Amino acid sequence: MRANIETLFDRPTVVPIPNGTLNLSDPATRLRLTPSAIDGMVRLGEIWRLSTEETCLLLGDMSERSWFRLKRQEPLRADRALSQDMLTRISVLVGVFKGLRLLFSEPLADDWIRLPNKGALFGGRAPLTIAIERGIPGLLEIRWHVDALRGGL
Image (cartoon, rainbow, N blue to C red; front, top):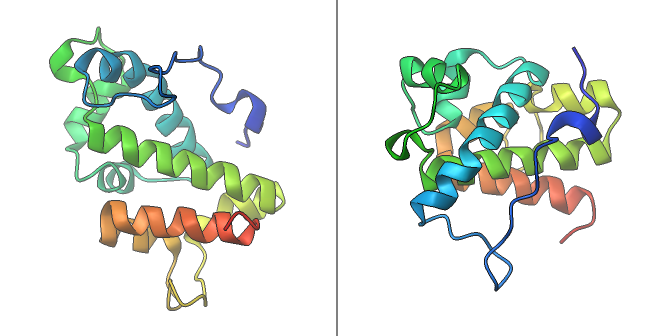
């Protein structure tokens, strides 16, 4: 199932704090962002054909039970909001997705995360493997790599 980039993340816009950034240390902000972030991660998992285990590892080793509970979108309580770390991870992953869709045709963009890559950053391994093994630093390196391919650096 392929998704249109314009409709992939069609949630209401979140109002930023005055300096133009979100305060992810604020529990109310995290609680407000959590439903959109979960929706985005579910859709990204479908497009990239991520297993539950891969999704949980990309989110920082979340338990499968916790992921299934979040996906069901049970009424959120403050203690169930995604952490700053998880929101950051999802934000970076969505940025990688968007960059890939701008760079490549849809099939290649959607498969790129799983394809062996000869670039120095990857050493013949798939970007997904790097992201899981290196955590946030690996995710950021992949995001910067994709941005550099687009001429963004």
